[in-house]
Structure formats: structure tokens, C-alpha cells
Length: 325
Length: 255
Ligand SMILES: Nc1ncnc2c1ncn2[C@@H]1O[C@H](COP(=O)(O)OP(=O)(O)OP(=O)(O)O)[C@@H](O)[C@H]1O
Ligand SMILES: [Mg+2]
Image (tube, rainbow over all chains, first blue to last red):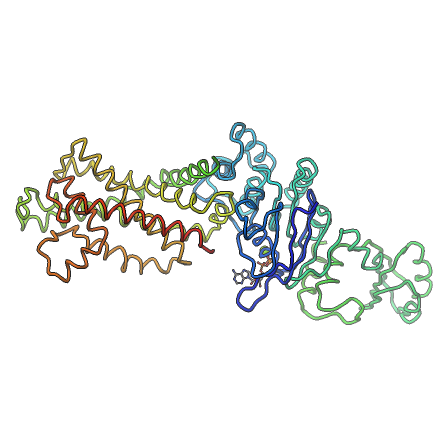
């Protein structure tokens, strides 16, 4: 059953169309990812679903309630972890949690145990009585996540929840988000820049760019859309023409002695490629990552083209992701 | 039920913050004390112990007006400060909660009024000790009602401006064009009876004048210029109007 349904959902800010006729259907209990570059319209989409922004056009229903007509009922069913800081500096971490529990109608009988549990989860037990003024960015983030989990909503919106967290904490949170989804059947909508995160967590991913969905499927399917494995060869003098004739080779590229291509069943075909291409110094094959998918759908260039675009957003993404490896 | 715990939550937040900014409370008393001690004594020494036959010294005469001024500044700024909440996005956290905007509004009014009440209590104690204020149980109760009505009105007024404004830049304008006129045209510092007609007209359309008038009648026993029933009618009407407009502004607020 779909717990979130949008129909031509649109948001315009003056002339800019931030979200452009979005049609989504998200199932109950699913972890759904919105993956897209800065300004793609992710936050705007979540804000409309959470009744914080009125849509310009189209409509959306969350937990069966229309976001425009039944805003109060929608809000009763959702939780939101915002991209930007939204806790009170003058209060301690624990006080912020307590405040949240009161406002979101959490059963107050065992509130202390609940707060203890979420604090432990994000590893802030020993900082809980400190005013949030003295928290680091990552600590604040963790507290706000704990807060979003406190009232166990049916639908939880996480807007870049692990931005700026260290890898250890991120892994921790992934585990918890997974657990929340399987045990409590919470539907989770997550926006992220991290491919790894989307790949690890999400049942389905929508790649969104300029307010439009460029692709939507399971991470596996999205990756297989790229046409198999990525093969990278270091070759002094590659005989490209010969390789190009092979039917199963796609997206053949060559730059500074590095030849890349994609193909299905690389272990079966690799022999033949190696024979034809020339003196190979090293071979690397890998499964495509969501990163490849992301670039494929949001880059200005399709991968078929030989020359890479210069300095575009996709290029920068590629470089930074290479550096991170 | 959740609306009530939400109301409590919002009050709890304001009160916690208030207790952590005790220095602000102390400094909020400095301005009224300067008016009472320096201005009151300075002008009062020229006017004698029996100001215009009221039986009160000038410092005592302006005491109710200075209380009103304290509420004006404190409560209006309290309301304006939701702009800060907007900036740190704390407001989003509140607005996405399953609480009606009206509840959020009243939580703010309640929080602001509590802060103001504590300040006013301190000022009142100083008044009894040093500025010739005598209170009976009845006049204390009446004073509390009057001050409460004023606080609700002014916190709401501040919240209306806060809901409409998007940055702190407008603060100065509000001080110049709202707080000062409300204060100076309220008769806080002078009797309104013998004013020239043009000035009297301004005083008469200022709702705060009726608060000063009633407070002076209740605390000092000086006959009310507009009559107490009129004073109370205006005060209640003003409070209702501000609350209604305020909760409407909150429902419409964008961020
Ligand atoms: N309140 C607003 N007024 C005007 N334009 C806005 C407003 N909010 C967002 N926009 C614009 O809408 C577009 C989408 O913004 P949005 O915040 O949804 O992007 P995003 O996908 O969340 O990006 P990021 O990854 O940087 O968080 C951007 O071009 C942004 O400038
Ligand atoms: Mg965003």
C-alpha cells in the first residue's frame, strides 16, 4: 500500500521551478532515497510532504491525508530531521528531547527510558546535560536524529541525516535506521549526497535533478541499467578499433593509456578483450556503483560520448568521489 | 490532550531559557529604575511632594506608568524574538509538530507573560519598599489583572510583528514607531486631563492610556480620567483583538 502518493506535485519560487510535476508512490515500510545534486529540489519536496510549504500545483497525500486539506493529520503521522540546525542552543540536549516528546505527544510514562535509549544510540549520554551551545556540528546532528526517532512516527523524513558525521557514527545510524524500518515498519524518506548511503540503506532510489525524476528503481536495477561491470585497463598502445567491434563492449573510453568500458559477464568476455587490446599492464573490474548511475543520469553528457565535459557539476562529483576512494 | 502538553512544552522552553538569563532580568530593571530615581526625583524636586494635588510625589505618580513601560519593552521584544527562532530553524521543529498554530501562539504568549510577570513582581517590590506604593490585597489583585491583560496584548503585538518580519532589521523601526508612541502617548508621565485637544486625541486612541489610567486609580487611588469601566472595556477589547490577530498571523506565517 502506498503511504505517500504525489500527483504532478510542483513548487515554484517566482520564476524558478524547484519541483517540477513530481509523481511518486512510496510504499509503507520502505526506505526511499532521494538522490540529487545541490538545488535539485530535495528539501523542497520534503517540505511540501511535511506540510511546511504549500505546493504551487498538483497534490500529495501522506498516510492517506492530503497535505493541503488535512495538514494537521499529516503532521500527526510524520517526523522530520531537518537539514539545518533546529534545536535550542540555550537548552541541554536532554531538554531538547524532552521538549520534543511533549510537543509530539509521546507517551510520557516511560519517557526517561526512551530518552536514555536514543541518547545511547547516538552516543551522547555523557553530553546530555550540556547546553547545546557547546555541541559540535556532528554532535548536534546526532542529537537531532535521536530527537526525530523519539516519537516513532509512521513516516520519517531525513534530510541529509548523516551530513558531516564521521564514518563510525554514520555506520551506527545506518544500522539503526535499518532496524527502525524492519522492526517498527516506519517508512523512511531520506535525501542524501552519499551514494554509499543510498546503496546501503534504500529499497528504492529516485535520482532527482532540476526538480524532475531522472530515474527511479532499486539500487541493483539502477546499477544494472548501466550495462554490466566497469572494466578498466592500463594499456600502452591500445588497439581501440578492434575492441570496439566486440558486441558486448559498451561505453568505450580512452584517456592517457587508461581504457574503460562496461560489459555484462566480464569474467566470460575479459579474455577476448585482453587478447585484442594489446600490451595490458593492469586490469581492474568492478561492479558499477550508484555513483556511476548518478553521473549517468544527472551529468550533462551521456556516457556514450567520448569527450568528457569540462568542469561541470558531474565532473566535480567524479573528482571528489575519486579522491575519497 | 497533546495540545495541552504542547502548550506546556512551549512554556517550559521559555521559562528554562529565562532562568538561564537572570542577568537579563536584572538589566531589564535598570531602565525603569533610572526613570524613577533620576527622572522622577529630578522633575519631582521641582514639583513638590504633592503632585497636582494627588497626594503623591512625582516618582510615585509615574510608578504605574513606568510599570507599563517595562511591560512594553520586555513583552514586545519577547514577541519579536521569534525572528531568532526562524533563523536557527527551531521554529520549523515546532511548526511541524502536531500542534495547531493557535496552541503555538498561546504557548508563546504564556511563556512571555511568565517572564514579564517575574520582572514586574520585582519592580513592584521595589515600589513598595522605596517609591511610596501601598497595596492592599484587593488592589494587588486588581493590579495583577491589569498587568496580565497588558502583557497578553503586548506579547501578542510583538508576535504579530515577529510573524510578519523576516529579519532583525525592523527592530529599530518597531521601537521608534510602536514602543515610543505607545509609551509617551499613554499619559505615563503626565496627567491627561489638561492636555491640548490635538494631543488628547492621540492619547485617547492609544489603548495603553487606559491601562495607565486604571493602574493609577487602583494603585494610587487617583480617580480614573476615563472611568474604570471604560478602562477595563478597552483593555479587554485590546487584548482580545491582539490575541485574535496574533493567532491569525501565526496561522498564516511563512518562513
Ligand atoms: N524559500 C525559497 N525561496 C526561493 N527559492 C528557493 C527557496 N527554497 C529553495 N529555493 C530554490 O529551490 C531550488 C531547490 O532547493 P532545495 O533546497 O529543495 O534543494 P536541495 O535538493 O535540497 O539541495 P541541497 O542538496 O543543497 O540541500 C534551489 O534552486 C533553491 O535556490
Ligand atoms: Mg536540501
